[in-house]
Image (cartoon, rainbow, N blue to C red; front, side):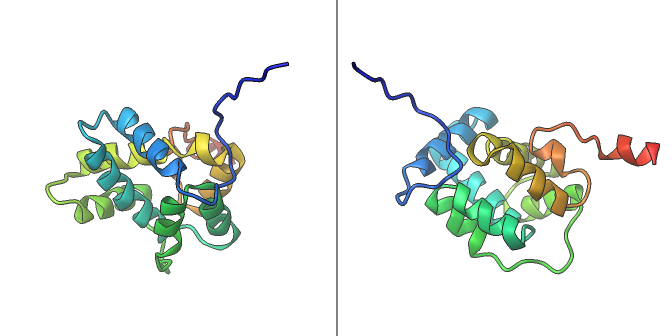
Length: 153
């Protein structure tokens, strides 16, 4: 009996960095970036910013679920004491990116964060979002239902 290996996304990071090029390509495709280099620069900037906002078990699990290089970007950041709103987070990415505007930074953030759910799984995305202020769900490519649930309370 012959078996065919089908590539699949896993939430466990391999010991090597084989997943890094795949993450960069996913970001490049999502963001329609003209070069791999641009997609990599955007990915590094956004993941470094995200690494300042995710803490505790979610930070550890996020690092474990990502390719090695992405994990290092997350884990090497010092957590902030005050988490930024989603709009402030986008503006902070804009300030780290030469020539960026809020609009281009929002595109960059959404391109990177939107590429993460297939890598890390919906459960971990939900746990990360639970740590962050309202508004981040849209950046991860999810509907933001927090306003709806608050209005019914």
